[in-house]
Length: 177
Image (cartoon, rainbow, N blue to C red; front, top):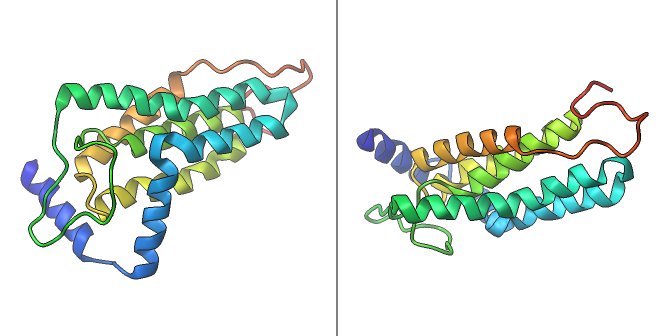
């Protein structure tokens, strides 16, 4: 498994690179630090959608909360970030621990929870996928860190309790519109 992880990581670090793509991957990574981008997205939706304000607010705090849970796992596993000779990482990280990817965990947790609030929010998976793919692309994580982060995020997003809409006429969360 380790050999496959390194092979995929090396391929992601050496193919498809351009200044523009690297810039976007870094910007997404910065937005994912501490779940900030996801917090802002959830807070914006909470401000705009009064009947589901509490559910969107839960999504907003889920990003940072997922980062915290992820960091606790990192402290137990203690896997160092990847080092590839001649290919330094293209970004910085708040810790030297790699497993699992906090960006992937928080992104998929929030995208999943948001989709439970409103199916139209499934578009949140687009930046979630881009952010997750960007982690090994930038050399910040092994691909397996990202895969486990995604799985953890999907479970968190599916299991977090979401408050019911405040209006009894409002359609059920996750229901068709």
